[in-house]
Structure formats: C-alpha cells, structure tokens
Length: 109
Image (cartoon, rainbow, N blue to C red; front, side):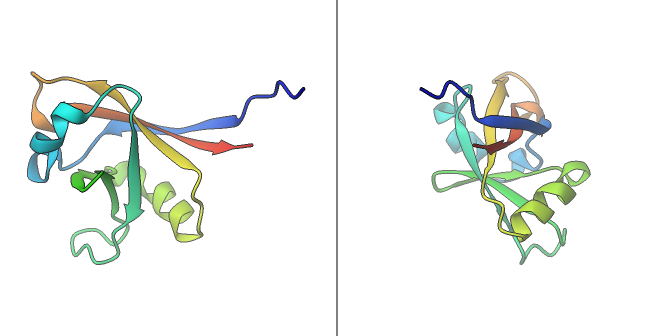
C-alpha cells in the first residue's frame, strides 16, 4: 500500500483583487473555508496583459493581484492545470477588497 501524500507546494496567498466590482456580493453566501475556486487567463483584459481571473460557478469574483499574477499567468499559459486555489479566510464585516483571502498551491502526484 502506498502511503505517500500528493506533493503540494505553496505558491501564494492573497485577497482577491477587484472583489468589490464583480459578483462577490452574490457569491459570498456560498463561499466556505477550503472551497476550491477556478482560475483562468483573461487574455482580453485591457487593463492587465497578464490578468488571471478567479471565479466560482458562474460568478466572477475578481483577479489574482498584479503583484502575484506573473507566476500564475506563466504556469497557465504553458498548460499547467494543477494549480489549486482555495478560500483561506472570510471576513463578512471587512472591507470588500479584504473579505475573501485565498491560498494557492501547485499540486502533483
């Protein structure tokens, strides 16, 4: 029996950028600690050539902040799909830009 755990390397943790401007208010009641979120390159973003969108179901939650998005952009651009982004913290009473904190890991076998 193989008792080895999957490899998990920390990439970053941050508050979702732009949470105020998108679907955060609608999605917030469904967000829970540990919930996995989706990330994808948003090539058509006119404000940031390396924009990495964070979403859940059909809700656009915001973006990986610019100070962190370079590595995410590069990994996604070369087809890396084993990046896991999960809700790390929720603060309902906080400023909208600080209400959802996430952690990202690169996960392998």
